[in-house]
Image 1: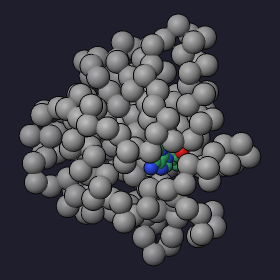
Image 2 (image 1 turned 180 degrees about the vertical axis):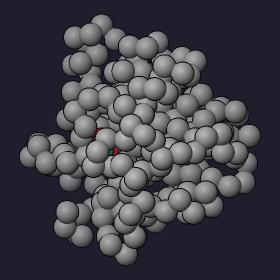
Image 3 (image 1 turned 45 degrees about the vertical axis):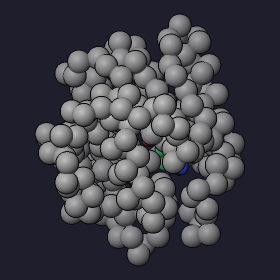
Length: 202
Ligand SMILES: C[S@@+](CC[C@H](N)C(=O)[O-])C[C@H]1O[C@@H](n2cnc3c(N)ncnc32)[C@H](O)[C@@H]1O
């Protein structure tokens, strides 16, 4: 992707969807998250930068109360149509995640992170942390597949490189690590390049 890509411009993301150039799109629910959905109690979950929302649909089918946020119109329209077809109730929000209003603060038991953190401008990472802190209820979890661990920030993006150390420094004070592992069922292209780390807001 060209370095001049403006990560904060929804139209630029929308253009990728229109072009069908969505290399990140798994086209199905994420196997790691399917296991999470089976093992966690259904509750309020927010998916930031949800894309086509296969996980949003999967969590909704499993009884979770899903809010899915993306500022590009195409993926939000896609989820709305799927939800209608499947008679699911998913709260979709076409909005910049950094513009979510305080009404969403303290509303969520879980936040799902997959390739949103690496998609935003790295200058906004602290802001992302603050957003997650605000959205989660006390005791809430951010369930993240942190990716790509094999890239450096200096390599450019998106996807912008992520390091395990950076994530742990960011979610440091006021958080505890509930689980961390390299999943055995990462999709092939991401095996060893993503790590599941679940932080609990304490
Ligand atoms: C790399 S894609 C990942 C999509 C999805 N998480 C997945 O794994 O398929 C990043 C997504 O985040 C959205 N996005 C990027 N920055 C955003 C922002 N500031 N607010 C809302 N959505 C954003 C883009 O429109 C895009 O759909």
